[in-house]
Amino acid sequence: MKAVLDACVLYPTVLREILIGVAKAGLFTPLWSDRILEEWARATVKLGPGAEDIARGEIAALRVAFPKASIAVREGLAARLWLPDPADVHVLAAAIAGHADLIVTFNAADFPRHILAEEGLRRDDPDHFLLDLWKGAPAAVERVIEKVRAEAERLSGEAQPLRPLMKRARLPRLGKALAA
Image (cartoon, rainbow, N blue to C red; front, side):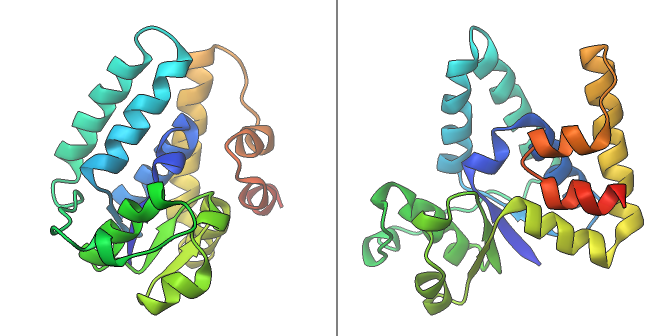
């Protein structure tokens, strides 16, 4: 399965690390465009000095880890597309150009299901997407999440209980399923 990761799901560190971890585990093929990665880097500016530099370093590492993930959109493709927010058309264009199955995003209103269906695509929020992957490969997803949780704990110097961490990462259903 190929999934375009929108900038809004790449920006939060814990969420990004989980998504990229399950991709590295072979549970899906991530896709993005240069513009999506640039949006992520620019969004980090509000985190303070140095945040954009860190994001650009992480982007470079992603490019090395997933050399085929960057999608070049052919000229004119975006011109024939429409979404409620014209600034998101590039994401849909990347999904079409990359022959993706879905777009993983928090922006449901900007990616109406009926418009995506016309292009043979669907949309999913990260919580539902990861919950489905967990149902199919629970051990692999749990290993990734534990690794991310342990790293968050190491970096913060504080305990990082699973459910609150998942809730902060906007993955409450996955957190609940894992805690059951």
